Image 1 (tube, one colour):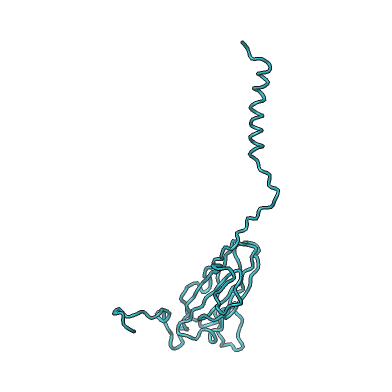
Image 2 (image 1 turned 120 degrees about the vertical axis):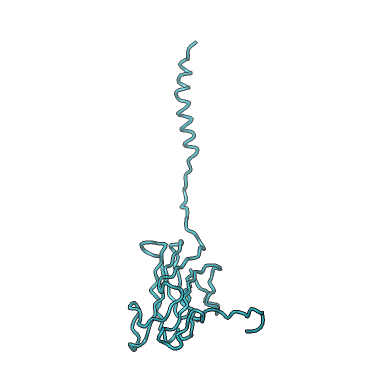
Length: 195
């Protein structure tokens, strides 16, 4: 009892036809562009200059900052590395000093590394903005601040905010020089009474 010609043809074409059927049925034809952008993801910010969270007003202006009207005007530079996975989004940055808006800038989509954004550095005039024994300087970054609010932290999208902070003490030559303890909130006494 041998294999008939019909059985031989059936065996020869059944396996390749089955493989072809599986390959074509598993494939998917996409006729519409797929948008892989991540919406509403907040940017991140990392301190760049000054590198330390506690710093002193320098004795000389940072060379990146413009000179003041008088040579004794001292400027201090604040800069952060900003990253945002929504590469097509324009970002806004705000520099606050002790809760007051000192400056604001905008940065469009980045060239080169699309996730890393560059803002022009913020230069603050020390004698105008950094006058307390301890000054809190904050850099806030978002896709859009709310301009209908008096709150400088409010954004259009809740949670869409990156923040970097510095505590800036007067220069060591200024009196009073201040130290890091000037930046800490007062602690209640151990006995629970009034300080």
